Image 1 (cartoon, rainbow, N blue to C red):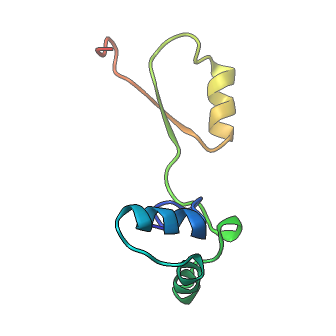
Image 2 (image 1 turned 90 degrees about the horizontal axis):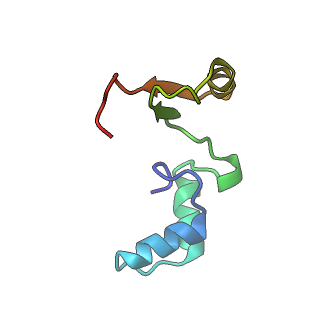
Length: 84
């Protein structure tokens, strides 16, 4: 859970486990993650692709696209006349 949801802290992971029927303490979650080499949330590296799927509307002007790309977001345009 911590790898798939890098912004989740010990308490959030504990709550998710509780929803699945597992009763564990917050300190147990912390101990297990530390034993696996998983740092606390502020130190965890967010992994995954940042992609924005957009249509071909004129609102996606060159300055807007450049701003997004400079932020590390890759833009993928939908095909021409793609259904809504």
